[in-house]
Amino acid sequence: MAFEVKWSAEAEKGLNKLPASIIERILLKVEQAKVNPYYFMSKLIGRPHWKLRVGDYRLLCGIDNENKILKIHEVDHRSRIYKR
Image (cartoon, rainbow, N blue to C red; front, top):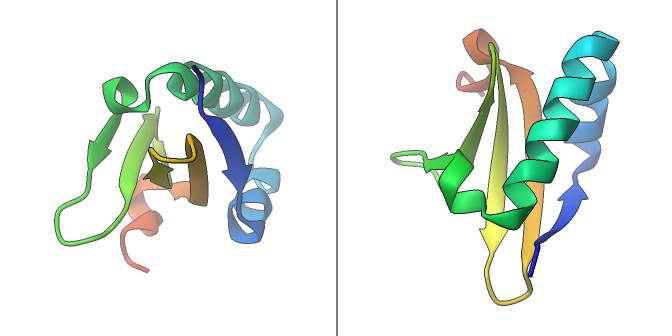
């Protein structure tokens, strides 16, 4: 069973700032990750988040196995996302 995807307000704001071609790539990768998030994501050391790589962009996510929810917290360029 696929996970349900929930976007935070901050993630939606970050996504909307990107060019349309990048948004399309990100949405496609999120659709793929819904089926098996552990295949596409890596756990961040020292943080409670998982990362999803899409080219030079990263999505910081949370995975709720009990409720089958994939929560996307932040979307930004790899040079900026980890400095927060």
